[in-house]
Image (cartoon, rainbow, N blue to C red; front, side, top):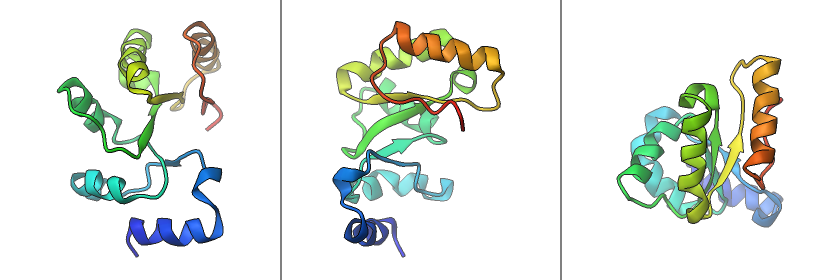
Length: 130
């Protein structure tokens, strides 16, 4: 079953407008084909583990596949608060959602991310309890 087939079957059960996005639906081994696969998706996609790959796309001035609508940003893995803010500044004019998330972070870090989301006025939900 391909992701395209999966998204068609899923849409039969749940209309695509009910789901905000599907987070990182592909195995890393499919990353090279992900642009083509994501273009065919019936659902919006949020990238997480492949974020670094797609950051290179953005830095090089390329657009992302049309169905990538959100980036799951883990400040600790990205390199800290300043790099996170730089990424958010890149995403805002492109209408990409930034979802702050955590990766084995302490309570202090999670509190800092919560404050950061308020300061920079993120409009998307955060994934800090994952």
